Image (tube, rainbow, N blue to C red; front, side, top):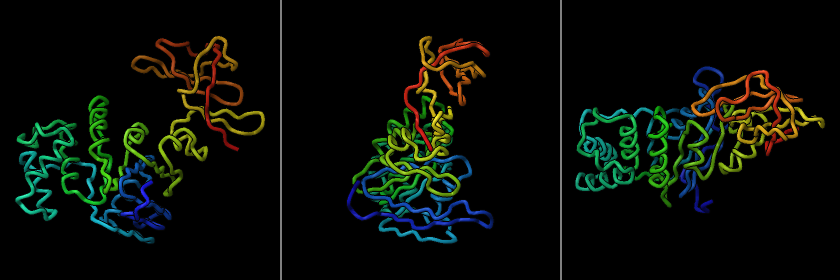
Length: 306
């Protein structure tokens, strides 16, 4: 991690908005050069956290210290009825950038997101993916010390999202900027982040590199949220949580089971297999085994909890 002082530090953030706390005692620090992803279920307070960090909402308790400028891009692109270039330059105007510098900075930001070809297009003619690119470019152009992004890939089809993730992964990285991104799923965290925070029940339930958190969740609750859908109670009293990718159908496998349910997918079928002590999920080539079929499986990996 960058050893320079944090550009933004939050301590003990608690937000209730008149009801039960959405956030409870959240601590975090954003350092120069890093991209931090925040992942959690709907309604857990991810957008609320971003709003408090940006200064858009107040916390009932806790503090936020900002050592530089902060810019936030909320979920909806909300582009004005003007050209793409004019939208980006308008944001620079609101930010106080001198008029003589706006064209160059807008062009650089659009190029970083591979959106320079859209510069003269009216914003209301853009596709969803194009509008998202312009929205990100508008945020990049202001060159803030801290950039806060709220689900910038939401609502996109898989190919469009993958292409934007690829381009954003390099465009967002800067040695002197800290970026926090609220993400929708694990793939986005893998693609972008140096550090991942998982929010559950209003607090930070897991923190670390995406690899560490996603491969070895610290608690069973975090594991369940992160896709470890299989659950087996072992003879020693521990619980094994398993992702479908860690299970394979194998006629010579050591674990016997029965197919309890099937979920057809585009090119495969996801099967729930009842085994001793619980059940696991396994993805099989279509058409896969029938419901009620006796099968054998092999389990490679998983996370154990006392």
